[in-house]
Length: 123
Image (tube, rainbow, N blue to C red; front, top):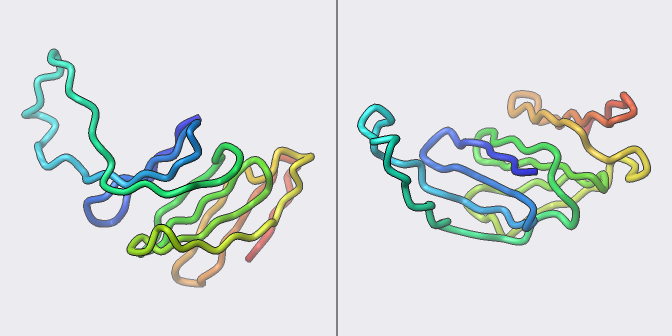
């Protein structure tokens, strides 16, 4: 399952089955100028870092932070400028499919994490 989030500037963050977090530069060409009949080459990532051990189920970019959660119940926080540095927290139970959704509020500096069993954790 591929997950994508956009920064407030010109970056795209993507993670998929390879469990690698990749940063791409947002294409500068406007969509209306792209010939959709021509297959475009795949973009090359600007940066790649090791991600979660299991597939990512939720990811969000807020201010300068990338917050992600995965099936094993782990939440990972990275600063966009230092993607190789991360903080990890085990917050949900793997038995219940781990993290299903999350929301990071930069205003309150809290992370809300939802589980498949209907549970809510506030970090």
